Length: 286
Image 1: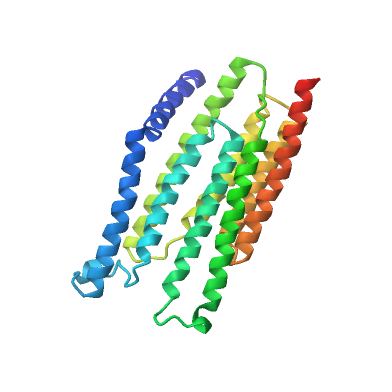
Image 2: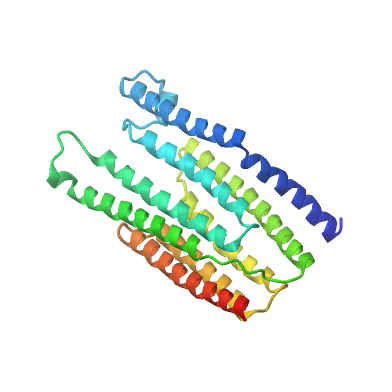
């Protein structure tokens, strides 16, 4: 199979997968799955608290009801990661924005997780540190959310090449990369679930996947060189890859530092986007 046929096959697979994933039918199903998982988790925790579950099942469930919130957020993040992979061929900048969206949701999830340390009656001295953690993660998420909206308003699209054939080929290569990412994502998810069910030490799934994204972004930067050696485009794309590295570090940074790194990273991307957009506008006016 030559390269052209292989790219056509990957385009066919990607386009059909994207069409299904973005369909209203699928979006409704995803929402239903999250709601049902939340309610079932609550019910299972309650049954576990009353010792109604067999030992073989009860060992997989906590006695804290807030685990249901965490499970719902984990599913939401899983679906968001798939959306991130599918948006990569459309826009490198759009892919980075999706990464920030995921980071903001992870910070919100971390804020919710602090609730499990609250015990009745609530005594400030016992929960003060957890409240500080909640405030840090929540405000970090809000500031990143605001930064996302600002970046979207600043964005100015500029084609990497004027050749329609080259643009089509570049998009085809990115679709192939996205399919590879989906395979890696599926493998990591299955492996993590298997470790959990076997009561083995699980790895930080999202941090591990962001490590893969770092190399993916670098690969996209290098593939783009086949179609343009423009310094401006190379600098912007390399800057986006740096942002992914910083977000990867933020995922494993301790509380306070994780939110601070996320905020500093989105400020960096805002500045980069503003400068690049101004340059694109000036080029159009010349």
